[in-house]
Structure formats: C-alpha cells, structure tokens
Image (cartoon, rainbow over all chains, first blue to last red; front, top):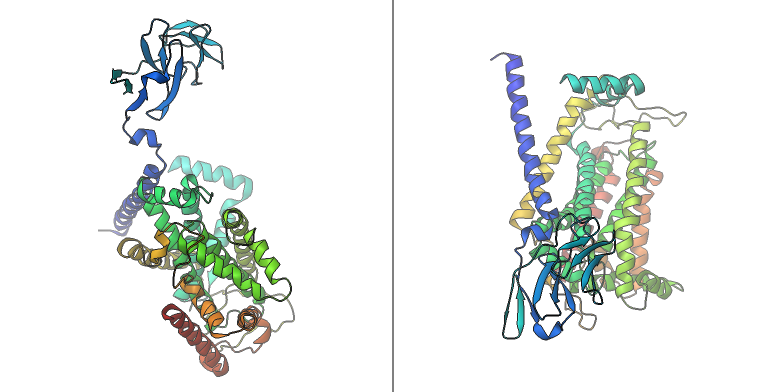
Length: 139
Length: 367
C-alpha cells in the first residue's frame, strides 16, 4: 500500500471512530433533552362525576397536554383536547353561551368542539372516556 | 472539499485566517524536550469544558429550591433518560478536575516554571485553583442532601474564627444564622454564574500570559538548567529549533486527554459512587446532624488541621499562611536554578509539604 492509500485508510478509520464517539455522546444527550410527553404513554385520568354539573366544564392535564370535560345542558358528556387547532392557545369555556372561545384570535367552538367562527382549521380532537361508579375515566 | 476551501478562502481574504493558523499552530514552536506534564493544562481546559456542558444540562432539570432540590436531583438520577450519566459526569468530573489541577501545579512547582518572568502565570493559576475550590464547595450544597447541608454548615462555620467580623461573615455567607434556603440561593448563583465567569476570565488571562512569555523549557536533559531571563527587558522565550504545536504537540495533548478520559470513564462506570458517602443519598434534615460528617477529599487536610488545633483561629491562620506562602512562592523563591535535584532545600520542603498534606488527608479520612 502506498503512503497516500495508507493515509486515506487511516483518515477513514479516524473519521469512523470520531463518528462513533460523537454518537456515543450525542445519543445520551438527545435522550436526556427529549420531552417527557414523547417518552411517556398517556395515562388515564379519573374525575368524579359530581365535579361537573350541567352546563359546566372541567379543565385537566391529559397526556402532557390540556383537556376539558363538558357536561352539556342535556346532561351528556364530551371530552375534548383544550388546545386550539389554530395556533395552540388554550380555549376558554363560556358558560353563558355554552361554547368555547379561543382568546388568542377569537376562534369559537361549540360544546362538541365543532368550529363555529374564527380561524381554527379543524374541530377540537375528541378524547375517549367511560363512566362507571360515579367516576369519569378519560383515556 | 471544494466548498470548504471556498469558505476558508473567503474568510482568509478578509481576516488573514491562514496567517493566524500558521502562527498559532504549525508555526508555534515548543521546546524539543517538552514532556507529557505540559499537557495537563489542555486536560484541564477539556475537563472544565466538560463541567460547563454537563452543568448546563443539569440546569434543565435541577430546581434550586430547598423543598425541591433533592427531589429534582433524584428525578435526574432515576427518571430522566441518561440523567444519571450527566449528573455523575458532573460529580466525578469535579473531583477529577481538582486532581488534574493539583498535578498541574505540582509539575509547575517541580520544574520551576513558576519562576520569573512567570510570576503572573503562577498567580493567575493559583487564583484559578482557589476558584475551583470555591466552585466545588458551592456545588456540594446544591443536591441538598444531609452531606451537602452539614458539610456546608461546617465549612461556613470555620469563618467564625476570624476575630471581630467572623460571626457576621458566617451569617453573610449563609444568608442567615444557619444554613437554609437563602444559602442555597446564594451558593447556586455563585456556582452557576459568578465563579464560572471568574474562572473563564482567569483562564483567558492565564493563556494570554502563557502566549506573551512563551512556554518554559523543561529543566530535564539540559546542560543549562538556570533561568536565562535577566529581568532587564521584556523577552518572549522562543524555541526556534523546537517542535510545532500542530500536529506534534496537539497529538500529545490528545493522548493526555485520552488517558484522562480513560481514568474518568473507569470511575464513572466501575465505581461511580467513589466520591459519595451514604449521607449523600439522604435528604437534608436541619434537625439531625449525621455522625462523622466529612468534606471532599481535597479539603480533608484543612478539616484535620482545624481538628488538631484546639484554637480554631490558629488552625485557620496556619492554613491562610500556607496558602499565602504558596501564592507568593515566585516572589520568595528567587533563585535562578530550575532543576529540582539541584534545589535541595526546595525539594525537601516541597516533598515534606506534600507528604504532610497527604498524611493530614489520610488522618482526616480515618479520624
């Protein structure tokens, strides 16, 4: 093997070792910095039924984000993501109008999460839930 | 490689980058008989960079609040992916950095590199040493464990021995009569902002002085081992027949860093709790002082000195005198000879001092 060939070979070996070392340092640092929500499975949230009277809404944390449970005037329940689909602000429940308002850009959603006015491009995503023994289990 | 060359050409045309690289790397010549001990400065720069990086990463999850600090450290260790690795890198790294710093100082001492015209190099290095001790002491409190709490109580309490202002100084250091939440706030600010900024500034000054005076020639393997500087005018100590910093000595530096990393990783993976007594795993309790609370290994000699002398002021004064003597050594030891074997008084005193320090540390550990 001539000198230039040997140099190239050693250069490649060195670059390979360097890349390995960089990966050995980079991977733990990336995992350390990775957000908790992406590594934790969404847990279940249990809320007593009596905490949500008719026409009221309850906000809570779910899967690392914000969610809301609404008991409509007819007594039915809806669980929704509380994150506005426009630019990610948290919607507010307007009890008198029985709808959601996003204070950032005046997006309106019905109690079922359907867009009724403003810029939101999609309805609020629904979250599955079940009711048993006086408790609402979300997730 | 062509785009890279174009970028380098573009920069070179504007600031003469190739000239700087040539002057500072391939054209920067070092003594032909330079040895591996001269790489300890680079090892320390690397170790400090590692501390800064791991420290910044720890700041993401650490909470400097007395009610939450211990929990946040436990969270880093147990829940955050690779949090244990980052935290242990920081804790083990601080101990290893102090060890490398002591070796660096010893090599400078024995090779007489502190002698004129390098008094300022020694002085800035000595202040750096004190700042590293300071950053270690303040960092020790942050996990808010029993060890942190009581080691800080003992360390800050020693200032009580200073006449007149002692009690007020202790209260000032702690931010209250006892160690408590205000102490954590102060020590946190010192640890993550004030002292690191001081260390960075002094590293800059230390390197500037090194560049202005030039690297000293090791006294080994030379006929002439006396200091050539006459003190009549400024002179850069050059080495026209020396070896280039790049690639020759840069590879030596890399080798020294690799050896340091091997030792560091060996401790990290095979004995990570080497520097952790059991009290480091118990949350701080201001009402229960654990038995046999001890400082870090590099403060054991100071701790034992304070124990030996019944009067705290005498113990503290002796330590202060020893530190002052060491800081002013280049102004006291003014002889031109640099070879340690041709300086019997220096050799006897330094070896005796070193043995005394080791002896006091071992005594402190087992006392």
